[in-house]
Length: 528
Image (cartoon, rainbow, N blue to C red; front, top):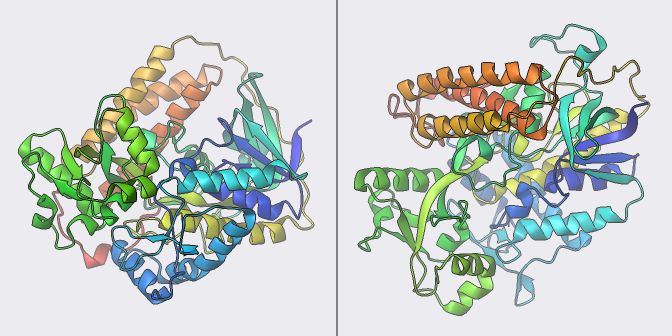
């Protein structure tokens, strides 16, 4: 007998947890997370949550900053909706118990690249961790919410599983839950739900260098794509300009807020080179800073540039960036006395599963929020610290609409058990590991910060070969998390590459040497 819940949440980051808290008033909720419940991209977010809460700030300024960063692809109505809802989101988090950094009895507001005012609400340099902790605490005691750790969602259940042929042009597809793999019991079971939220995060693991945790394999986007949902703007991957470039540091992120406090990017001789690229220097938007560093490294042949904060008061550094100070020190870098060696790394996906203003996807009963969603807020480039804001706003809107959707609905019947007949327990882990490494190297080299027609064509060919190998292995092998994650990464790599090939211009995070300028005729979303 399948498990049945009113609401199914796939993912345990800020979007998923806040959605669960909101809908739990209307029915039972199951949260599926493939690791521990606290392991999510939200937990690693350092910077903060952008919102207009200062007396000298205006909604119009935040809206304008977002539109400028988005390079013409933001949906203005969505930007206004999200920005104006920011203060209520902050109040809600405070009501749930979030402890943000205060100064003189008020919220201490930071400033990051692309912002014209100080408006970043933060908890020192571990804002995401504070939000995650707050939400998990509220969920732990809620009688209507059940969290399933170490469970992996394999496929969304739609009419396809009920025997009806579904095509990409079908506008009458419904989601009835998901097939879920219990990694501890090694069993796959259907979990039925009246409404399902995808809050599975981004795709950082598709690249060789990423600030994301290893769980960021784009599972929700791949599942939605296979279920025939529309996906948009996947060519816009944001590369964070500054990650710690020392052995074993795993691209540890040096927050943009460090540059907001006065950090200066220098080459090895001490030259502050960012002003050579943009008049905003270190406070230019991330895509410009990342591309500038990438260009400088390629021209110089150096392995790193350096972020200098030695001129900033030690107390300011320790109060504002305790986690960054401690982590750098653990790798032998005293940031109060030494420059920090940094390089860019894949950081955030601005595209994802296409949603409307209420988090609804093109599949009925399926909602999406957080980094897995393409809502229209970010356009071609995300403004710093708008992501946590977007996650909270859209999880709230999705919760309101899905609560209406489940009213008077019942669970679907006739869903078949997961069929793994004819498969074997393979022990070829080396094949999975090798294919993942090859995929990451291909995407980093050919679909990275700077692209070209030739690079994209090569990536497309290599990715297709990896798809054929992996899909053949998947069809004859019992499921494992590593294999399913690889399969999902390949789907995302295909969509990213195909989307990049279709955009014959440079805009925001997508830069190609064959079309180095923006094209007014190409100012539209890429929808697959």
